[in-house]
Length: 164
Image (cartoon, rainbow, N blue to C red):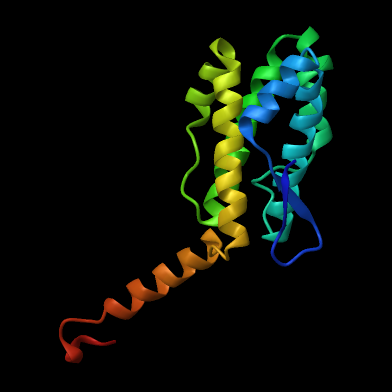
């Protein structure tokens, strides 16, 4: 069973899913579980982005699901959805303070050729982001603001007489 973790600052929760469990359920259900999983991880990333005041983690999990289901008839939309899914996962990782996640282009390539490994990597990196935010990882926006303040403090003029 997946561990439920609350999103800090909201009433929403996310799940720490075991990557091998996801792959197993996808095999048992002949791929149908993928649709449920894809919707839920995109919804969790959207909720996380909204809690941090950004839309870079996604805005519409329904559109992502539509792209990988009915969009497959047009061929291109599933690839775009998966690529952008990796980008959203990277944004979630950065906002949670757990690193940069996994390269979106490489993730898409692995997904095309060896999708179970890409699913494992995707969920594993997402789990790291959820653990980091639950542990109180500083949002990237606040960390960047602190870095800018530190730079302005250290950038004092060399000669006090040169102040304008």
